[in-house]
Structures are given as C-alpha cells and as structure tokens.
Image 1 (cartoon, rainbow, N blue to C red):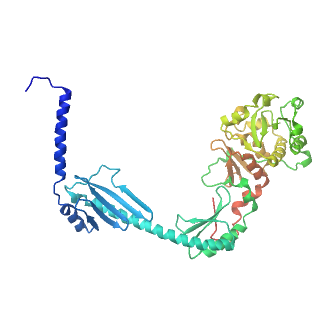
Image 2: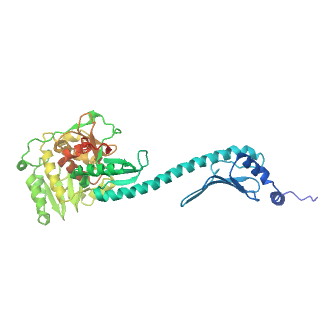
Image 3: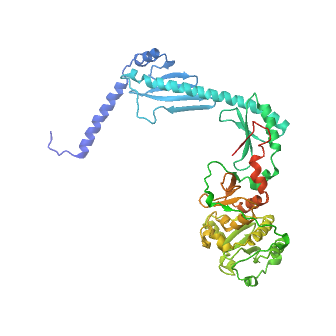
Length: 461
C-alpha cells in the first residue's frame, strides 16, 4: 500500500462504491421468490376475508361493495390504501399517512387486527353513506311532491334536506336576521304541514318585507345583559307637530349668521324648507349639506351619504372638507346611507330629541365622557344619536354595546325580551327610524303565531 495520505475525497469515493454494491445486492434480494399465498393468502382465508391476491404481492380486501382495502408490495413492506367509490365520488386515501406504520412479511399474522379494524370501520361507513343516499333520494322525491303543493297553496317557504331527526325535509320562512317559522316534512305529513305553512305565512305582517327588518336579531338565551346598564326610554309626550323645533345648547346663536349658504338655491327645496321649519343651523356648499347637530358635531350629507365630524369652528366645513371621508375610513366608520325621505324623517326626530330637558352634554357622559374624537370610531354612531333612542322610541329600554358593536332594545327592565342590530352598519339610521315608526309591530312579531293553533309550525330564533 502506498504512503499517500488519506483524504476526505478518497473516503467519500470508497463509500460510494460500497453503497452501489449494496444497492445491487438489494435489487437481487427483491427478486427472490416469496410465497405470498402462505404469508398473506392463508391468514386472510382463515379470517374469512373477501380478497384477491396478485402474484406480485399486491392484494385487495372487499369490506363492502365500493369499500376496499388495498396493499401495495414495495419489495420489502406493504403500503395500505383505502378506496371508496360512491356514485361520482372516487376517493383513495393512504391508510397510514398520519402514522409511521409499515406492514412487514415477518410476523404478518400479528397485523391482522389492523385489517379487522379497517374492515369494521369501512362497513360502518358504508352503512352510514347508504342510509344518507337513500334518505337523499327520498327527500328528492318528497321535494318534487312539495313543489307541486307550493304552486297550489302559494307559500314561499324555503325547502331543503333536513340534517337532523324529525323529517326528510325542513321548511323555513325567514322573517328577520334570526327569526323564522319552520316545520319538518316526511311522506306521511307533508300535505298537512304544507297547508299549515301556507296558513302561517298569511299571518306574516307587511313589516317583514321592509328592507330594514332583515338586519334585526331577536334576543336569545346567549345574550348576557346587566339590567343596571339599561337606559330607560323617555318618549316626549304630546308634542305638537307645529311646535317641533331644534334646540341647541351651549351653541352661540350668532354662528348661524356666519354660515353662508351660497348654494342653497341649488339644493333640494323640500329639504331646505324642512331645515328652516325645524330651526336647524346649516349651510350648503357645492351640493354638500352641512348641519350643526350640537356643540360637539356637524353632520355632512353628500351624495346620499351621511358623515359626522367634530365641531370646533364655525367654518369647520372648510377645515375638514377634504378630511371627513378620510377620518371615517381611517376609523373603519362607514358613512350612513341616507336618501331624501330618510333625511326628512331624521331631521324631525333630531328636533324632537333636542327638546328633551336633559342637555346633550350630560347625555354623552353616560358612556365615555365627552371626548369628541371618540365618537368618530367604528360603531360610535348610536352613542352620538343616543337621544334619538331615549326620546323617540315609544317605550322600553336600550343598551349600546361598545364591545360587540350593536344597539339593543328591550321591552322590560330584566332584558328578557328584545332585539338588536349592528351599530357599525351603514343602515343604522334607516333601521332606527324603522324601529321608531313600527316599534309595536317589531316587538310583537315573534308572538304572532302563539294563538294560531298551528301546532307543527315553530317560531325559531
């Protein structure tokens, strides 16, 4: 042997030669004759499996029609796969993709409990799927029968497969965000219950079709409200329509003289007349209407959108003309949608609320104090307009949830019954006006079917 020093490269080359030899010997080992019938076939036969075994060592076990366990021989071990064929669904899954398990020829019989488990599991799966398929076919047939009755009885409830016990189909007529009338159908009762649903729908008041009813959610057992946090509604009594006037507190009356409305003539006449009728301080610039709400805020109406921003100068519009929309977006505070009809109603109710004896400055302290910037944040509008709730709702109690951003109205001090809508919706004003004008219909809606003698129709929320 030479005296040359051993190097890293030489060692690596010599090991590579040895590994190539090992690979060749391994390939020859894989070509050896293996008695698969003895290793696999005999144990499977003794177990009573329904199976096929190929000369290559691959096998398949039939658990149920369409449910197969397959073993692929790699030359050293078997890899196990599960196959399910249901209609148009063909799914193949590696049985051990989550576990480091390989089935070896050595001690093969010790693995039989694994196959027992897979067979039993696939049998249960087959039974589950077949029941579901049968029920689905039955529900499709029943749905066709119900469709014929739907045309005859003229009900509009939605029909869909029932995922729970009690019937093949579920029929639902949605009323508001979480309020619905429902029933379940099967072949024995579908005619009777379809007729009941048709009768139930006749009792639905027209208020349900109002677009502002859809976002309303009625109280469920999940609501947790401390009655001490509720604010009692104090509706203004016997207000003469002709005497409704906007009352400004802590606002210098000379401000109105400083407000130039150079574009007032180009603005909607009915809106301008309403502003003057109720005594609002306002001005119009470039088709943008700016209304003084109180000593804290302006309201800005532009292209059927309402923004609110801090009042700190008589010419605040010039200061924030380009920044109002930015502040709303920056605080995730969406502008309110407001058309002409809604604006006219809002002006009336703002005036009524302002006539209450409690000052607006004290009102804000019910919440977080009087820091104006706070009211620009997301969902803060109901706090800004809390006097609308307190003095324009007909009765009850309300609670403004600052955490989940919703406005809650209750009929009782214990907060047992009530409803809510989200405070950060751009429809908040529209929903509030709807609640003020249809309060009685809204609170009575869940109870309309109580005395209807439709025992299979349920009111759910």
